[in-house]
Length: 159
Image 1 (cartoon, rainbow, N blue to C red):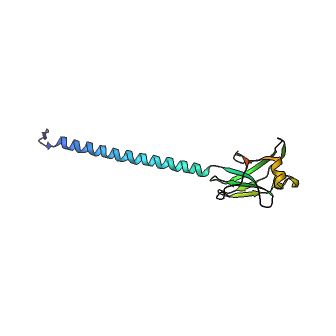
Image 2 (cartoon, helix red, strand yellow):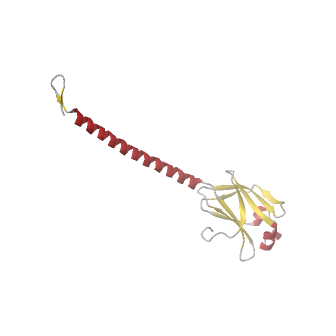
Image 3 (spheres, one colour):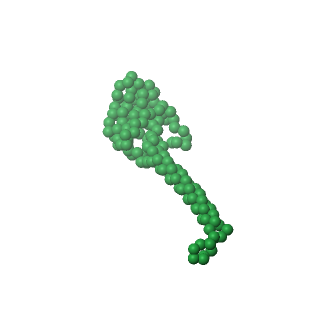
């Protein structure tokens, strides 16, 4: 369909307008899809950074083959952790020891802490005395995290 405009020029209006409308819709669809993919990628990256940077310690109390007590701390998070304070609680509920010791653990790293480094008396280092009297070891980090121990041996792939 053609129309005669003033001045004598003939223009094909409807096909041109139709082509422009189709092109605009196509561009809008492509841009919308690209924008959604970009937002999803950004969301996934932010989540993975958050998971990587999360502070997470596991504290294990267990018996060695020599009947000695072991305190193992694993950094399961993705950030460097500084332990700045500890407390050792007796099964009777009393505080055995506490202090401002500084331990640094890199991401994915582990730390074996000697019981005497936490103020546990030498007569309580053997497993029988330790496990019958110590309820838990509590660690506090510079970031404000508080982690309590479990009486269990870590999984092989953790240690």
